Length: 183
Image 1 (tube, rainbow, N blue to C red):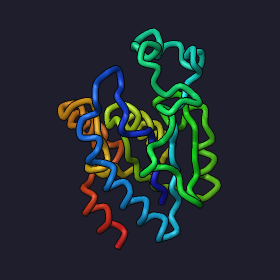
Image 2 (image 1 turned 120 degrees about the vertical axis):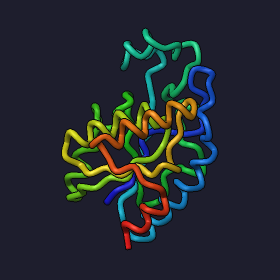
Image 3 (image 1 turned 120 degrees about the horizontal axis):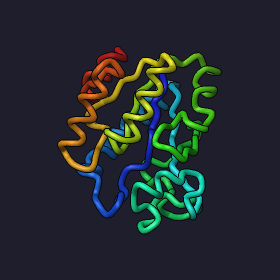
Image 4 (image 1 turned 30 degrees about the vertical axis):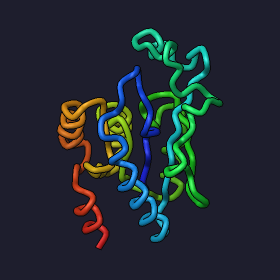
């Protein structure tokens, strides 16, 4: 079992605060604590783009990312917030797409450790978590998404994202039910 954090919460994307993002930090910290204490893998995912967005031109064309300069490599905005920063023994994967598998070694990391079950957390529910979960499902990973550990641009988008995730791609559960699964 591994916990994968598909993106960095607590950012303003396109000048829109990700709703309830502060609320997801404590459950994610507790989940990381649990995984670390029980010898399970934690993979932190960091999003970074080249300053000119040459690594994902389509993103720059469709959204105003150049204007807001989000996740530019080497900037504070691209850093994982301190409470969720990688800890000793945890891994870090850097991505430049919404899907944490695309162009990264995430699949190799998981296969090398014979991991078949993933717990996905982060923001945004309907963007990075959804894209990562969909691709993980295509790679035959069993995904679990704890409701309290994801946030989105608004409550409606989070609800829609969780509904889409629960349609075969993953088990969408409460954090409490996730811990019961480990018993």
